[in-house]
Length: 210
Image (tube, rainbow, N blue to C red):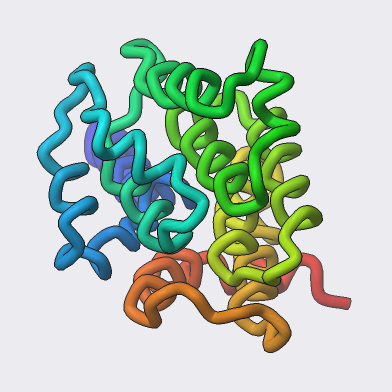
């Protein structure tokens, strides 16, 4: 009997792990952009591979669609131990002729800052303080009121809440989806994919309702 109980608890733990992986891990909205050449190229990038210069150039191009750039980041295989993010950061530093990463962050336009922050977050989900701060700066800096910029920030914030307050995960992302003042520059299928996962946490908001 004890073995059955232990097995049941273990199976439930596995189910919870797969259900509640994380807001950054489980929102594969890049699937909505599988027809875009840059996203296809990103899918060919393996763990620890050198990120192609063509992708670096696209990610750092402020004129490139912000939603597609975020989809490329979402599709790429990032892993902090292989320095994938540092490849991107060093490329940006050279491209922007910045002295260091701190100078770089001040030089970046809102959309590229959002891409940079999102890449930083997905490459190291255990330390989100800086990525979260930069994402909020991107939103404040964004005069275009981009839905995609706001969503990148919301997903990072949702990841922060994942570690300490599940009740805030759904409201954080839903607030962006329901904000009619934002420029809807992300494909609806991408939004649907995000909310398919984030919606799993809606029942957790009961704990914060009055």
